Image 1 (spheres, rainbow, N blue to C red):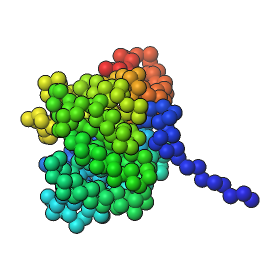
Image 2 (cartoon, rainbow, N blue to C red):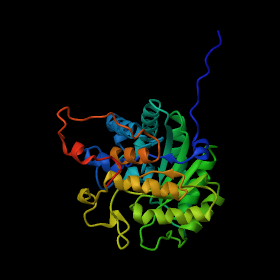
Image 3 (cartoon, rainbow, N blue to C red):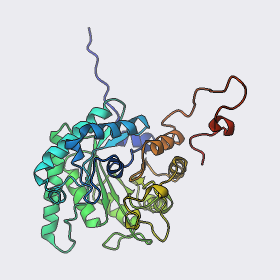
Image 4 (cartoon, rainbow, N blue to C red):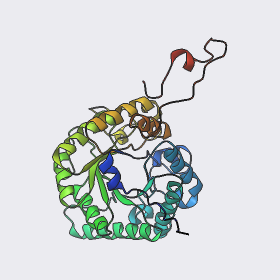
Length: 338
């Protein structure tokens, strides 16, 4: 009898060649709301202290239609974890986060993205800091590979283009696809070195990044134009992962609001607003369409439906009396209409 050959899931680049790929949502703020992450340091020790809680959130995003799960390894580097007395847990946190994400991803057709982030150790004019950041990245990369591996890398939330370039340099050495996203705090988007989004996209692509883009800080209205500028500047795949909060032209960075992080709920977008972003991003040629802080399963699910990742049909339900028995039935609501 011929032994069945296991079917390997399509990689991120193969999926992107076939159409847009939908990412997951935000982890840190949602797990803080659930009592598993401390506001302030926002470090990811939940990966070893409450892996069941992390597993549940991954599963929510998977069920909502996410096509990749991001490891809970944002701020999982030596210097940042040292601020909460957990520098000796760097390896454990990175390895556990990969194992949790891998377990849930195997329940569907999802990939695992190994996540690295800004380190707060990079200083443009101090070459020794560049080597220090290399060492921080290398340790995380090695830990995640040792823990069973990931399908591709995501380096996110970089304000220094130089630090993003260091990430690309180190991640490319593994041979896996590399996605890297910048973030922009000010109304006129620029890296800390002064580069426009388009210039960032070109330089990151030139350094070997497979996917470039923008994430966090900005809501869809402020972030999509940035992603479109990147789209126009490079032939690489482009990602956009905004926060699910209603930022403004005057205050495009939600972390700068006085009500951050405890009073954000009134500013959260409706699921249909994130669905509208997904539609607009797809029409603009954005390839990785995702979301960041404040985005939960309902947002991802609505995005998945307008992108054709989940069916939009629901079983018919009507009152046998012929009279509506709920406001939902009376008004004929749909999930993706505001």
